[in-house]
Image 1 (cartoon, rainbow, N blue to C red):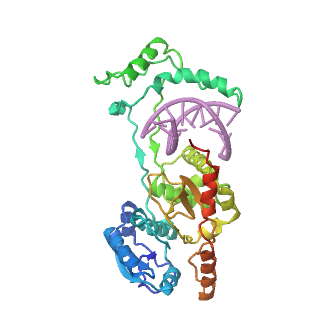
Image 2: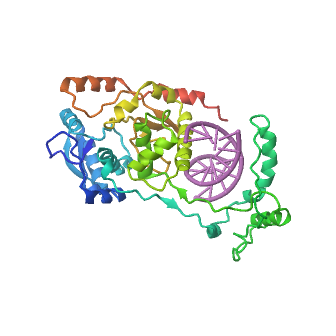
Image 3: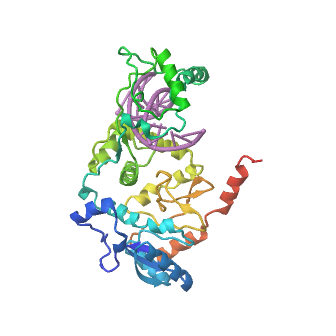
Length: 368
DNA sequence: AAGGAAATAT
DNA sequence: GATATTTCCT
């Protein structure tokens, strides 16, 4: 299955050049109904099924094609994606993101400032739930446990800083009534006793930046531009992001997100494999194609789990782990037929390794 | 200012 | 309890 915005405009330079007016529209929601999808398969039943799915997701199905050549053609013309079945509906529902992403890459300068998805942390919204908030009260105990624990690692003094005469944090005490809840009573009790310590002088926190959607997408692009996660460092990263009109981020925001990004990558078993292949060289000018196999769902380790973003680079989920497929991928540059065939053969030889999944199972701690 | 870790919010 | 994000420290 290949996907592109249209195959009609004949030139094979990137023909995805959004108009200004189109862009702001895009940033909010890409209209599935203007996305043309070419479905290719040699089985007519599959074709029909796929067509149904596509239509259900409001895509325009141009044709149900079973010609390999169509794939090649589409690829040449900038297909964003190439999936093997079976494909679940989530994948389909999110196809449009590729187009948005591609457009962003092709015309970063045109993109209007992205409004950060900021979550207001209103102190007064404490009233939302009563689910186990005991922690607040316990945190003092924790400090003791921790210091003990830290002794083995690094000795770092707990952050206790008293600057001003402590002002008891009343934020939640005015929670009207509805606190017939034990946890709260407990914590309040503690506060009453020894509020002389700890950081009760709550300095207002910055609103949280939510690294989802466009922001995350651009973050990843910026990381790529800087030479990958190992080379990217906060300040240049911040500048990159500002260049694509993302404003309002601080260096700290970026640094911390980068930190998390690193942690995520380290958690990835196959990270080493990934490093062996210089993806950045492939990904930069255009995205690699991805082949999905069996029921593995591709996703980005960088996205939040609630974000369905099925085809990010070359990763997929497997047994709750993010795996990386090291198969060489097809960039959509102007390969001649022969080169394409060679690459395709390489791809076919490469099966997403069931050995890997087996290996992981074997290494799983035995359950009882 | 980078990197890392604690604190805090979700 | 786990994660995400901010804040602080070296």
